Image (tube, rainbow, N blue to C red):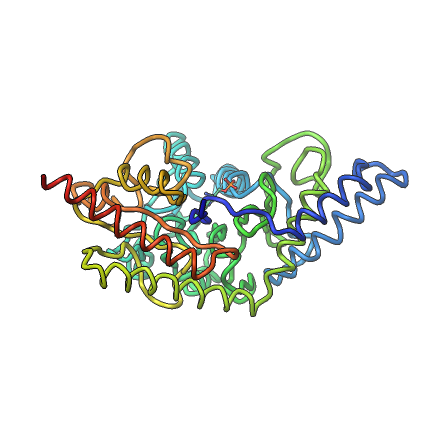
Length: 384
Ligand code: PMP
């Protein structure tokens, strides 16, 4: 079986598993306990937090460990809106955010907040003119993802950050998909809050962080104990946090650049194979070296997402019809719908292939081969 669904989740790196195994065996203490066992667990938390902070040029005290990006997004959005409702009721986001952003937004609309969903073009990109038109004195929060999980488009985070320097609105970005591929500097980007999940970068599942710049204050989303500097209650998970930090250590700046280049090459390899075989297709989203290149979304006219996915699965290739979170629902992707309209056949005839650190050129050769055969077979059947 060949795994090409790395935007959904990634296999853990061997060193991450080793680090976590060691931690689980030796540092089982509660990090809040004051005895030797507790202090050891606390040291693991502190060392790891420093690594996580450095990876986005942040202060360690501004990193709040969470159960993942879902909790980080929910916390940033719900708590900001509730804490700042007295200053304004307007929030800006995009139409193609992850559901862990869109669902909190929908809830806030029910509570009386006004949410602007910036539209995207055919490459899944927003326009700064639309952003400027939406921003007003009532805006208290802007939440815009760094890069999209279904099509790999990137958003102009720095330009938006600069626009908000002298504005009351706090700026949150969901960097879950971008974190493993781009160098991120929260100061250069003028970002106030940023979400990350460890399992997208060969780390463990169920752990992530919310970066909260000093001065960005709101009550904890999870209430209880005084963990995470009183910002997130619940006993810490030092082995998972250590594994997260180990995964971050493995992805140096050079490694990120290498992966971006390698994944772009994979896209070219697949397109070359499809063209050589005369299979007609279109790319959904951006096709440029500085997009999030691990995500490759393809339209194969005339064949359904479901047929492609199940036939590829039978042939031993794990890909996705969109985001894994909505995979079970058979609902059309809100991302492709925002890009091409609900009536576009693309919405029901596309697949997402996503590359990871462990994929090889040979994987892509075999995948391309299988895709050509399956598309040809399905098209023949449709025309019979
Ligand atoms: N945001 C984006 C862009 C994502 O791709 C994901 C994972 N699919 C999440 C948030 C949520 O991450 P998690 O499920 O690990 O909380």
